[in-house]
Length: 278
Figure (tube, rainbow, N blue to C red):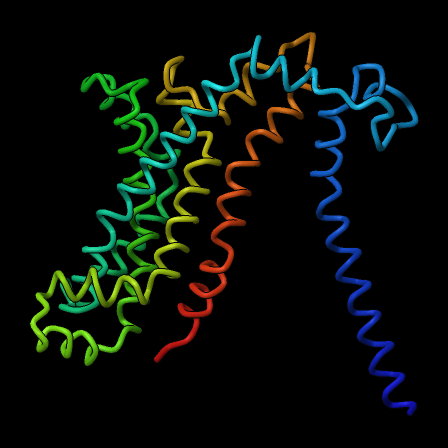
């Protein structure tokens, strides 16, 4: 009886600690959400008001109307979505060739991964000068291509593990039954490793969505992303629109959060698949 009571007490304490850590982690997010619904008089009040007494959507109305936040949100969705599709289109065949045919031996995969370790800030100035010569500044193809260059190494490295874990015998059997090699990849391998592909897509989309350095350097007005909008449009030396800034942060978090939530089932399966070697 004492042993059972001790186990239950220990489990309750463990869950209380997890609940406290989760609450502390979510506190800044909840504060930003609360501030986005407050009036200026409420978020300047001391002591602070945790929950708005008169919730208002005025900051969101200004964000969508006067500040033009919809354009920046659209730009971010187009750039992040285009980058994700291009990265998958290039990294899937590359990872398959490296995993199945050992192209480059053991050196090439590590060299590809090492390119991800190169800090983007080291290439910003050369990339800016190159884009200026090629007239790619402030263009969607230019920004998508820049993100693709930086995201492909990680995508290829992750996908190599998923292709290596897939049993070669199953693919050979499909080819014996009349399937071409391309058909075996698209009809047999990719449906099985779809959770792994979803993991790569989510990581690529999130890395592109949250980036500020390249977006700040290679954009002007036409392709400015939501992250650049956060740091420039709502801040001035003498005035900071705290309510609108909080609303813009909420607006910027929602798409990535929704996409991750919808792909959570594939994300968990993909991570567990990549962590178990066959």
